[in-house]
Image 1: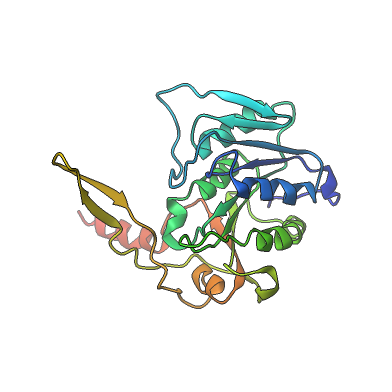
Image 2 (image 1 turned 90 degrees about the vertical axis):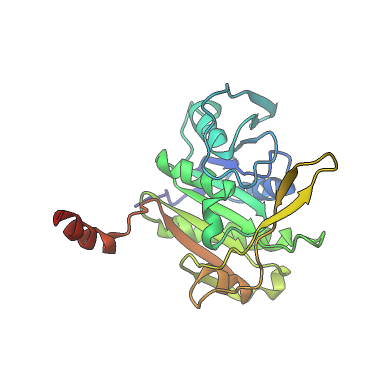
Length: 263
């Protein structure tokens, strides 16, 4: 189990994201973290890396830029940023906790696998540092993102999660509903949901011939089954999902072994 000291004001927190080091959500998360401790550091991608997943830069050097006191930018992915942040930006003392986000848009269901926000938390977990990913659901056709919802509820969530602890090789995925703070109906511990992804390719033709494609937005019509992240956020509850790094389907082990043993 990840365990934390009783005095959370002594924590060292490293912040990252996938929307970029200058994104509004990371500024929200920095304010949230400073309600917990003064020892807050940021190491995030220089540019937006939404949908980067758990990609790692292997063929090019990673440039680390110090842009302010305790704030660094990496010309790379969210995974790169956490890796460089832990091993270089705060190399004098390993962080006690990594916070990723706050992402503009939810990261639930299958989209967890594409999410740079979740992958930053995943990389920290692989490196032995407990991590929480935060995402604020929003309608991308609107300009109003309810950052105040995340800002109001995240500090208490962090304190309670650190008090409870959670297993090694697991990160916590938090999604806030698309509503003002006073319309949130509660907090629910959920499982990862599933929704039909639909046809997300929109074709367009180039004036000089050929074709190019835009990857479209996620479907919003499916609320998911009861007990899942999708259903909780649809009901304006904050979803808290423990995500394990072991992808093994253990129910399939014996049947597969039996079937392959016959060959």
